[in-house]
Each structure stands twice: as structure tokens, then as C-alpha cells.
Length: 411
Image (cartoon, rainbow, N blue to C red):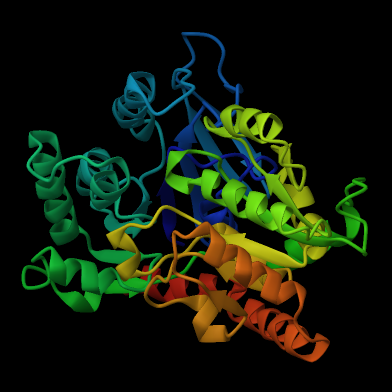
């Protein structure tokens, strides 16, 4: 029986998880008979919770859903600053100590990239384990595109070099975005590695859990449950990279046209939230409602009450490699149409015809698209809903776990 380690410092306990990929894949492999352990940090990302409160405990073991989780002690942080970097470094070096106490792995599946994949890779070599790199986002490229760092920055250059090195060393590579091979070609890496080891597994949805939560965890909210209101819903972080100010401006334009029956509900939290709430209050924008953070289990019900789900991010070049957002899979599983402001390559919305793509940073144009959904005929609207429901079966994690099992068996 293969012993598989998932190294993913931001993975949360399943009952708190926002990014569910590691949880679902680990549980799925465990059900197929593999011995599975997850190595993650004690600090729960985007919360005030730290599972280890003393300075003496190296790590704690917890079993969730049949999988052993090793929570390694890491310090608190509350933003993407120096404290988070310190937290990430703590995890890496303490991982070495924890790994020495555990049964040797046959396979290591590593989520961190660039600098933070080096120690997991070295651990795999020490224990003669196969190393699978699970790429959730193009880490260095995203820093350049989203945060505006120069490609000539010495740390960025170093990060690219380490990234190239780890791609070459990995036994198998999994990209969550479909254009992973395109990225390797553009970075000049494709001729340095065997491209047959490059795979794609999208971020999917656990349909069983999604449907259970939708039916068993309703939310009492007058606007959400009002069938006479056309509800435009966004779920996710409220930070610079998500550019929620754009959605606020869209809502303002629609409000000023007199379409008071179109209401925006924003579920999530982040560094920009308070500023946007203040802006809406000062400008008397009454058709947008910031609902704050909600437990993951309530999201399926919330989305089931939506009339239109919004996928929106800052416009950057990395979208040419595709995307694989958890929220997009949840939007599709809700069986409701999606309107996206970004036209990424390998676009699932276009592939499954479950919504529209309005590639614009013009709030007026985007507002007009929302109004077009509001005025859409029942037959046309239903077609988008039916296509989304059908597509969700293709994104079910049951299928994706089988793809991972094939990759694990290769190594």
C-alpha cells in the first residue's frame, strides 16, 4: 500500500476549508486504499484561529474524514506582509523535523511552489519518494501580474529560476489551469523537461457534499429568499486582486437606471471591504449588500437562490493560461448562469455554454449585460441553467480523483 503525503501549508480542516482541493483529493485516495497524510500549518488562513497556542508543541495530529492531518506550529499573521512570509518559512523548516518522525512516504504531492517547494522536494529525495508538484496558481507570474513587481527584481528572477528547477526535478506535474503546458513553453522550460509528465486536473466540486449542504443548511435572509428580486451574487475575497470596486460601480449604474429589482449580494471578506461599504453608504448606493464571511456549508444554498453569479478579477495576462477557480465550479454546480468579466483561455463558461463572457473594464457595458439577463426570455435563461447542471457532472471530484490515481500509479 502506497503511503502518500500531501504537503499543503494552507489546507484547513474540512469543516473550515475554503480551498477544498487537497481535502477532497486526500480523502478520495484514502477511500481507494492508500495511506494518506496531510501536512499543513496550525494557523488557519484568513481567520483568527491557530490550532496550536503554545510555543513548545511542534505539531499536532488530527483525523478528519478518515485522513490524518499533521498541523505544524506556525505563527499568526493577518495580511500578506512580512508576518505571512515568516509563517511560510516556519512551516518549511519545521516540516523537516516532523517528517523525520513519520513513516516514510512513497509519494509526496506538494502544493507550494518556487522557494517553498524546495524543502518538500529535498525531503522526497531523502526518503526516495516520488515527487508530484501540484500547481494551483502560477505563483511568481501572479506576483508580477497582480502586484506589479518587475521581472528584473532580483527576488523575482531568483523565484523564476527556482520554479524552473523544481519543474525539471518533479516526477510529475499537475496544473489546475488547462494552459500549464503553454506556460512552460512561454517560460522556455518545455525543451528542458519531458512534457509527458505534465498533467491537468481542474479544481472541481464535490457534488454529493454540495447538494447535501444546499438542502440542509438554508440561510434566513429576506433579500436572498425573495423570489421577486433578481439577485446578482459574488462570493470570494474582497481584496485588490479581486477589484470589487468594479462591481460596486456596476451596481451604482444599475441603481441609477431605476432597476431597483436587481440587487447585488457580496459574500466574503477582505482588506477592501470596509472601504467599499463606506463608499456605498456615502454615495447612497442601496442595491448592493455586503454580507461578510459565511461558513462554506451555506454557500450551496446561497448560490441556489441566485439569478446570476459574477466571476470577476483584475485583468492580467496570466488568464491566457486559463483558470480553475473553486468559486467557478461552485457557480456551475448551482445550476445558475454566470457572467464573467474576464475572457481567460480554456474558458469553462464558453466550453459548457453556461453563461456569458463580457471581457471589459467598462462598468456601463457590464451593467448592460446584467440587465440583459434580467430581461432574458425564460427559455434562453433555462438553457444556461441546464447547461450548468450538466457541466457540474464533468467537474465532480469523483472523476478528478480517478485522474489523480492514474498519475500516482505512474510514479
